[in-house]
Image (cartoon, rainbow, N blue to C red; front, side, top):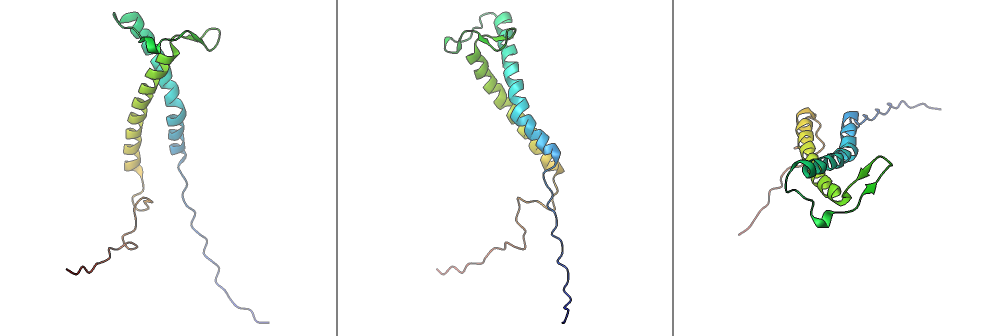
Length: 130
């Protein structure tokens, strides 16, 4: 019986996964910002009603008290939701801009997955006859 020598196959390089910090940023975007925005909107509406003369919530957004627990009652839940959505879009846009700037400065420019290698994609010359 004859034995042939074969070279061992090279191990494939492990792809770098997503850094845990970016997962944490995703958690902040999806969970923490909506909670902060709705809490801020409730505080902001209560402040405006108490301290700003002439401020009133439109009748379309008025609703009765919404009781979450025995101690926590939200007045005008529709107004809180409407202002909360506006605040949430504002916070998400600010957070997205900051996230993009940080990612742009910290990414590895040599192994960018969003750009094609120049060697693989060359422009084809076209012969246009007129």
